[in-house]
Image (cartoon, rainbow, N blue to C red):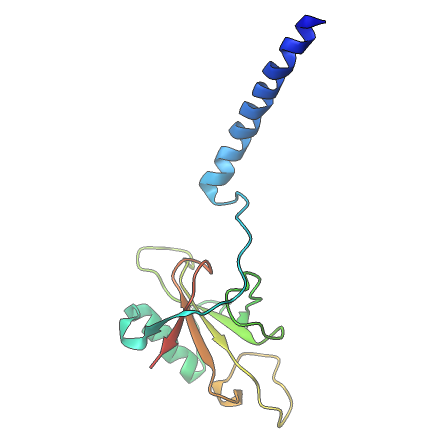
Length: 153
């Protein structure tokens, strides 16, 4: 009976090491569970002149209406992190900001919020800033949606 009592702490220790062994690669990839994001409070601001050159170029593309270098540019941004003000689905669209030296899309994005005008049919396709009631609100993230900064003129 006494031997079974001694095995229990050893089994717990073994399970601890097994769990640590399997969670280490996930943490290294960034797949480990993150603490829940806090609801939107106040987003820091960044001036257009302070943005990286690639972000300023993306901003110009958005204002012109394209063409965009990535097929995912202009897709709906869900705001699942709740770091931007709450809005109905389809309010936010995301656009890739090129990252020098990276062959994939990278982590940098500009997210555009647009309250569409009620006059005329809503266009389900790409966002046209002319359809925005207030000209759109622009946010920049350099760390793949972990933080946002509102872009101001």
